[in-house]
Amino acid sequence: MLKLFSAFRKNKIWDFNGGIHPPEMKTQSNGTPLRQVPLAQRFVIPLKQHIGAEGELCVSVGDNVLRGQPLTRGRGKMLPVHAPTSGTVTAIAPHSTAHPSALAELSVIIDADGEDCWIPRDGWADYRSRSREELIERIHQFGVAGLGGAGFPTGVKLQGGGDKIETLIINAAECEPYITADDRLMQDCAAQVVEGIRILAHILQPREILIGIEDNKPQAISMLRAVLADSHDISLRVIPTKYPSGGAKQLTYILTGKQVPHGGRSSDIGVLMQNVGTAYAVKRAVIDGEPITERVVTLTGEAIARPGNVWARLGTPVRHLLNDAGFCPSADQMVIMGGPLMGFTLPWLDVPVVKITNCLLAPSANELGEPQEEQSCIRCSACADACPADLLPQQLYWFSKGQQHDKATTHNIADCIECGACAWVCPSNIPLVQYFRQEKAEIAAIRQEEKRAAEAKARFEARQARLEREKAARLERHKSAAVQPAAKDKDAIAAALARVKEKQAQATQPIVIKAGETPG
Image (tube, rainbow, N blue to C red; front, side, top):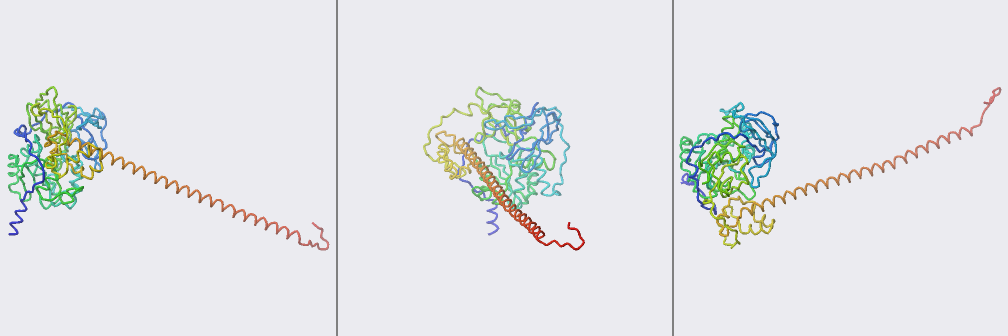
């Protein structure tokens, strides 16, 4: 009976609160194999494509580079970026990047030579003979970051897991509508994905390895099952389709029944999660000796004549990818980087593909529907029912709109995963996620300003303390100087008096002149 109960719990699937079931729209792009895109003439590689500081430049204008050559150095949490093809560095300058406001970030601009020559590649087919530290360092130096959207440096994440990871979760849910990059990667490269998972498992030595995949990916499930047929160390868990089951906290709960503590991380409960695309990149870095220079990107939407998934070189202008797929823009065409719920509209199409770019969505006017005017909140609580993080979006909306930052913080706005479920169900068409993003940005700015003020205060107080110490030291020296001359004067006076007394004593002594001597 105990064994039966253990087996039941082992395969149990939990369900998180909230969530929605929007139209999936995945069949537009998941039915054709991955394909290569012709090289662009010019590549724009932002130095910062991950969470953390940008690396230190190690190339200059005029340098000839090869594909896979580091453009920056990866030290500490700084993740390097690499040349996506061979060519010449023509500029190092700010360039608009994949950001809602198209912020300009320092980028390396490379004109391709068309040869696409690699650096010498040194693969570690015998990676099991390598130490954990060596593998993590290679993964870091080869630029691998989380490809599921966060962009956290994979090496740093593995290092931070240490020896306390009991469960390695591979996120294959890909729950957002339209996006099929992971689905197609698993269909076409299942064996390589599993090999990457084994490398991660070799590093972490977890007690169990779980792959979580939604049941709307039958071909990918079939391919993974075929690769895992003779494996007993990796468990494939097929979960019901529900958005946002691919969220880190949500998938952790679905597969383990454990909840990440408020303000904590999954490693606090012995769980580490990686995306299937990241696992594939780890395999290429370790076994093939290839830094990350490309990733799978979904090109979809009714404004694209040939939707599908492509191998897109990092730094490729979005316009180049869309044109290759038969982009037919309308007068007011919108292009979204990411999905319809968590993505953002690109201000223009010259921004480059980066490590976290998983989808380019070009919807038609029919897909978008008529624009809806924002109306007043009717407090229907539909948003609270849909929230997978168990928050109160209607309250957060009022706090955000009223700039009541302390109350928004108290109501855990930091736990909002910006999934868009609340905005999807809102009958008043309130763009709730936009309010929450703005509020979190303002809170972060306030915290940063408070931090700067505290640091400035600490510096001021340290300076004042130093000045007080120096002043006290000067006073002490002055006192000592005032005392020491007085003692010297006393000694000098005493010496003078002694000489006077000696002379007086000599003067009062009688002069004796012997007979026959002449007085001197």
